[in-house]
Image (cartoon, rainbow over the protein chains, first blue to last red):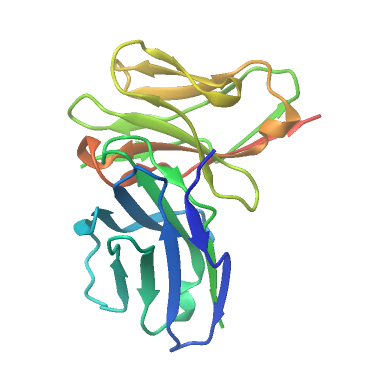
Length: 113
Length: 113
């Protein structure tokens, strides 16, 4: 069973509001991933970290999404100005190495009204 | 480009039958391949993985998968199926064997009691 912790489980925001969610990876897993799963069950990779450094990320041209994994603190994903299309399940996953299986947290379900 | 295809959106079986969920992949090198399961309202749970070696790999919950290089497939199997196996199943391939997962479209499995 996965030991990835995500908070909050549910998040409701109005359009234009900030939305912030957190993730504590499994102990001993230095690689952390963020995915967005939409209502059609399609997954979109957002960003991943190894320790505190960004390894890969989507084209952040919108600049509304930001993420960090500070040392000795939970990782976080923040949407600066929420839009209705951001409503989705945000999944955090961790692994020992990038190529290993990833273990997923329960997700944060964001609803933007 | 890498891709994963799950051609069956829905599979319905009776309890006790044998199940086989299809997955094909596109990748020029030797792949890593994973299967995950998502129960309604829950996150993804890791089932099993193929890295190298034996073409039949066993996982949790009584599942196994067969890797076939000849037709680029990694089908998930279980016999007999139980009603509790009803869920959505995703096949995934790590991006160039490291990093973000490339998911198939998913197969919704329904087991009739």
